[in-house]
Image (cartoon, rainbow, N blue to C red; front, side, top):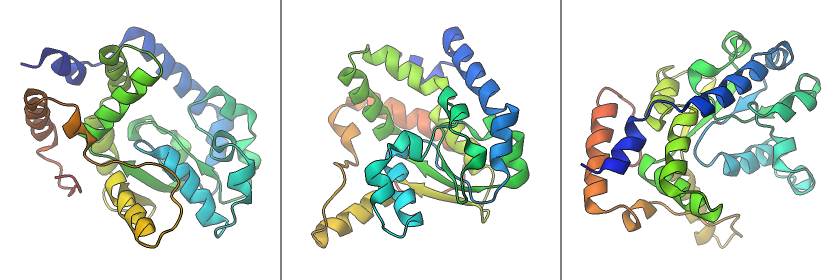
Amino acid sequence: MVTWLAKVFNSQKFPALSKVVKAALSIFHGPLVEASFNLMGDIIDPKSRTTWMQEIVPLIISQGDPELVDTVPNWDRVPWLEETRACDLNLDQRPSPRVFITHFKYDMMSTGFFKVKPRVIYVMRNPRDAFTSYSHFSRMIHICNDLFSSLIFVVFGSWFDHVKGWLSVGEQQHIMYISYEQMILVRRLQIQLKIPLCLSCIVGDWKNHLTVAEAEYFDEFYQKKMQHVKHTFDWD
């Protein structure tokens, strides 16, 4: 048994973090943010490589004009719904199409979201690579790897619950599912065409960090959790 990895996967919640999530939910479900979903132009892209999508979507909307991306920070251009500062940005007064971003699970979205059904871009990533990426981040900000990985996996629910929750909606016109691995293919096309790249992108880096035993445990846990999911993932 890979005990520390098992602890990460099997953890359900941390009391302190549950308070953070509850506070974020109280803000997100408040009347001001509820009113932010009056238009069909909202686009939300939760989870893996959301920052990359924060750059892509505004450029698509502006038809390639980089002025907004070059002059406005991404946290103001595409605000996080779970941040307290979102209430100070007058989201309801923004012109359509408005672009928001969140890490919320499907069942954590506001009632306004379910009524209006705004357009959604849901970004997924191989959980092995997502796990490895969080490990890199924890070292960068000098936080204990095991603890921070555990916090990341539970603060908005596990990766498995998050992905299965959004996939449970099924194929609908207002939801687009895309994977980080699919986005990488576009990057490879950029390389072929010798177009400047926006950032370094890696697929399969988990192979350089997980031991054989950890990878085997991960695969066993993954198969158990995802056995009833019909969606075809790029990393399977």
